[in-house]
Image (cartoon, rainbow, N blue to C red; front, side, top):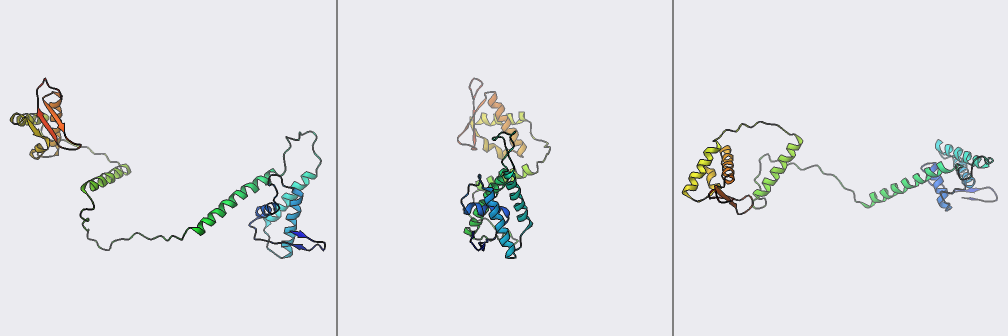
Amino acid sequence: MTNNESNDLTLELPNFEGPLDLLLHLIQSQKIDIYDIPIAQITSQYLSYLKEMQRLNLKIAGEFFVMSSTLLRIKSQYLLPENDFVEEDQAEDPREELVQQLVQYSVFKKVSEYFKERSEEVPIIAAKEASVSKSEKIQPLPLGQITSSDLANTFALVMKKMKLRQPDAASVKVEGAPISEMISYLEIRLNKKKKISFFSCIPKMNNLVDVIGLFLAMLELCKNHKIHVRQARTFGDLELIKGNESNGI
């Protein structure tokens, strides 16, 4: 802003977004410390801007005039005589509230400018709806790309998520051969052979409940030190070896 001898005011009037934007422009253009604003100087310049905007018949929002009254109020407080009963370090600075508003506005303005630059740098991304196959027939999975272990793990994961989403309660009624009968079955087989495979016994069972009973019978024989159990690898077959009561597991 310049003011020559003929009182002609030459101003560059950018499109200010509000009174704080105009104040911040005045402070930054003259490299004034935002925490130590010369209120008389800024008030004079601010009012000169409003006067020029009115002369150019620009639409001025009411908030600009509210800010001008605020600046005049702060300026008038500086003109009032100091209160001798208040210590200097305890006296409130009338500019403090305005300074806080300017600092916050400056921060948000920088953040908005950063996001604007980022939006211009990042290429436009267009969303696409999920493709749906027109064929209703279920197609077989490609051979060699998905193993049985992959399918089992995926199925287990899906079941776990379904259970977490909708836990259910059910009662199970177990019907099958008693454990004592399964113990007798294992003892008979071990009398014929001192070493048998657990997996080889499963086909002889009628249902899953009998398989569970067979496994419990094996544990019972282990506890009584009548057999030893070996397993070569994790989830592999179990080898049952006939022992005696004096041997450990």
